[in-house]
Amino acid sequence: MNKLVIIGGGGHASVLLSLIRSHGAYEIAGIIDDGLDKGAERHGLAVLGGEEMLPGLLAEGVTHACIGIGSISVRASLFGRLKVMGYKIPALVHTSAVVAVGASLNEGVQVMAGCILQPGVAVGVNTIINTGAVIDHDCVIGAHAHIGPGAVLAGRSSVGDGSIVGAGAALASGTRVGAGAFVGVGTSVIGDVPDGARHERGPTG
View 1 (cartoon, helix red, strand yellow):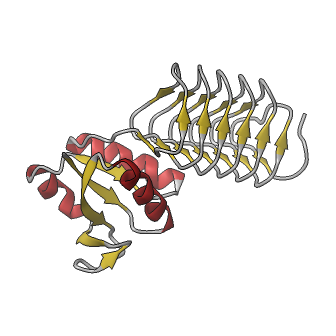
View 2 (spheres, one colour):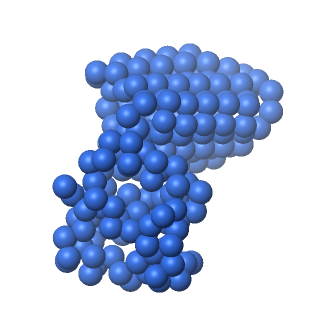
C-alpha cells in the first residue's frame, strides 16, 4: 500500500481525508501544516511538522502527497513545489462519486462525495470538484480551479485555469468562464465570463 501525506490541516483537509478513507487505497502517514504544532493531532492524524519535513518523508518512502488546502493560489504554488521534490500527486475520487467512462482526470484532481462527471469531461491538474457538483458531458475545466459544492455545469461549458465556481452556481450549456474568474454562490451564468472577472449576482449575457 502506498504511503501518502496530507498537506494542510484545515476544513478542506477533513473532507479530503473522508475521500481517501472511502476506498482505503493509501496508508496515511499524517499531516503537514506550517501553522500547527508538531506532535499535535488533527482530524485523528498526527501533525508531522511543517513543509520542511517533506524531503525526509519522501526519503523514508512516503511517495504520495495530496493537498488539503482550499486556497487556489496556495494550492498552485504547493503543487509545483511537491512536483519538484518528486512526490506523486494522485487524482482522488470518492467512492460515492460517479465518473463516466471517457471522463479525464489529471494529476491531483479531487472529486468529492456525490459528484457526477459525465462522458467527455476533462479536468486539469490540481482542481477540486467539491461535494455534489454535477459536470455534464464534454465540459472542460482547467488547472488549479475549484468547482464548489452543488454547482452544475451544463454540457460543453468550460472553466479556465485558477477559476472558482461557487457553491450552487449554474453554468448554461456552452458558456465559458475565463481563467482566474470568480462565479459567486448561487449565480446563474448564461453568457461568457471574461478572464479575471467577478460575477456574483443575477444572470450574465
